[in-house]
Length: 332
Ligand code: ACO
Image (cartoon, rainbow, N blue to C red; front, side):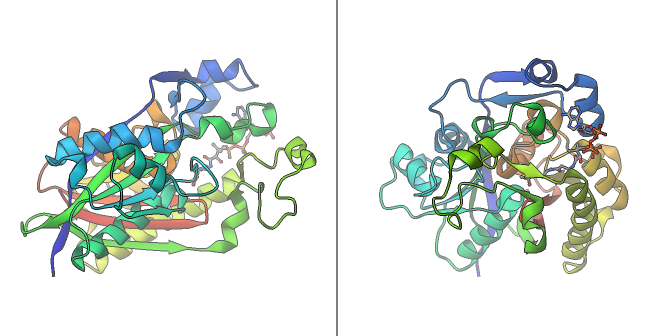
């Protein structure tokens, strides 16, 4: 059975930098509050209305193809992980496929929020092992900025999120010393309403009303304390589980690339895993929480900065809305 590997990585963020001070001009918050609670200093927003998730993904895919040394036309499948799709339907993968000029290439959207990249990696790995596809574009991409509540009611959530895109090209490798080793994912719908967008909803007829909009049900709503508690429990638990079932320990890890939700969460996770600070990647200070994009974006940067290199054992870990969580192991 063929083994899969991440053959290339690329990312793209919009040019508009939004600092904590910029947000403090729109609602009651402060640079000090945001940095202390989350580690975030600034995030990126799309430059203008009209740029959807599939638009941000195009340059990320092209950069990943360049890194993998393949042409865009070599891509034979797309997996698009996002919680901020261009439209309710069809999936953003179809819009991306058209923009990349890849008619006929299958496009699968997945909705697993901050764990989306890991769910997608598990699917891509299985497809490659089964011999179905050889050049899968696994995309994580979000345009959050058009869906946030810029009033005092939404400030707890709004300060966290940023826009961004990243892509991994996943394909077979003959090289025994590299590749995806394992991905383990979980979900618990008991937490579904602790981090969600309530409307528009197919359970409401009509799906959205003026009253719902007045109540702000179209904005993300989060019980931050519960999310914090679950994330700091589940990320170490699933990381240890995936290590153990592969006969590895945290001492074998060269780099932890966690989902970038909150710097305090990741510092606590690293402490529970006994990993020193130099083995943990943080870029939340510059991009905020880019949800499905955050893990491939952080890994792509870590490689570009020389922090992750060929042969390194990388642990990926995520927790997010759903609740969903997971961990993955790969050698670059
Ligand atoms: N600026 C200033 N004050 C604020 C802000 C803000 N942006 N947001 C909330 N506050 C206030 C609150 O109103 C509250 O005031 P009060 O005490 O007078 O009522 C006070 O700050 C403390 O609020 P808490 O919610 O208790 O703040 P906490 O210390 O829990 O931090 C935070 C909030 C940062 C959101 C934290 O709970 C957290 O990081 N949770 C995890 C979030 C997360 O990881 N989300 C990622 C998942 S996203 C995904 O999967 C899509």
